[in-house]
Length: 147
Image (cartoon, rainbow, N blue to C red; front, top):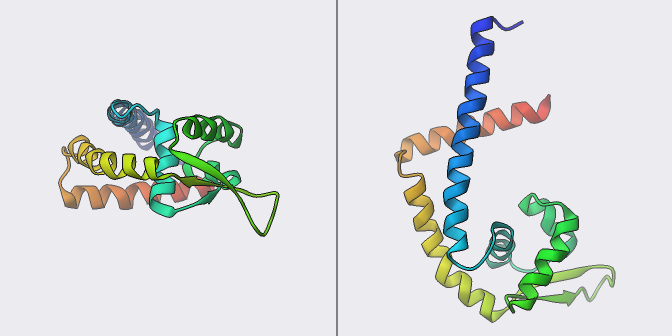
């Protein structure tokens, strides 16, 4: 059993981590809204931009969104002409989301700007500190998954 001090440290870590994530996400969401998108729309476009066509049924698990919300987001992006649906030639039950030339152009413009915004948001850490945090957070996440 952990000591009272270690339990207090775990609680403090949880609070500090939660507040840091809230602050970072607030800034990231502000940046994304500048492009006329919400965070979920941006995540879908970013996935298609960087990974190519994706089965709509699999997008939710790749961007950590409930599958019930994906259809709504895909519909909104389709109305904005940033993506289209493509039937799978091998399996009629599968439909792919595919980024359109308009979506490609948008992401080619805003993705570099978004990366700059992320650099500014995480500018409180140097490269070594970022690498260290990535390792530590992965370790924490894998441990929590195994519980």
